[in-house]
Image (tube, rainbow, N blue to C red; front, side, top):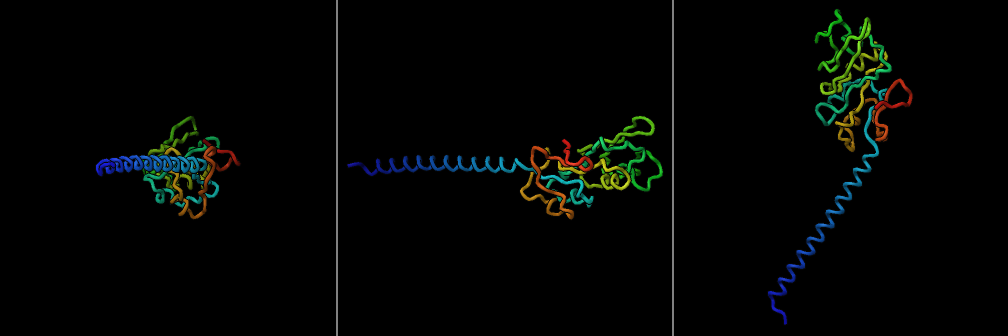
Length: 193
């Protein structure tokens, strides 16, 4: 006959072994589920279609990130390098100087650089850009639309349900293949990257 203490010790060992086995099994299944989810969601990303964008400003306020993952970017091939840039200067500007009172961007995210008379180059400082679309609206109204909004995928957390997409009045947000994450307006189906 076995002693009651040996039976208790055996039951404890068996309980601990089973607990470890079940914990490992749950961990493996959980890790597999997380990897499967990431690989599935990694096939597509959120992107804004600049051809549908109405420059409402909601990208700056509706994103779960502060500042927004939506940033202005410059399609240099479309730019006229204008002295009087509708995306850089406020509409009622009297002097074409780089003073803050003359700039359309509320955070001074657009940098203007002289090239040669009468051409200027404009660069977007993404760290300062909040995605408000004021420059994009100005460029569309008085220029050729070379300033466009895009989701910056190095910042975006790729939410299952994008808060900006939910609030977008023009339904400009959609899922696009992660292999071609950027859409541009003015070049047909070409993508920027």
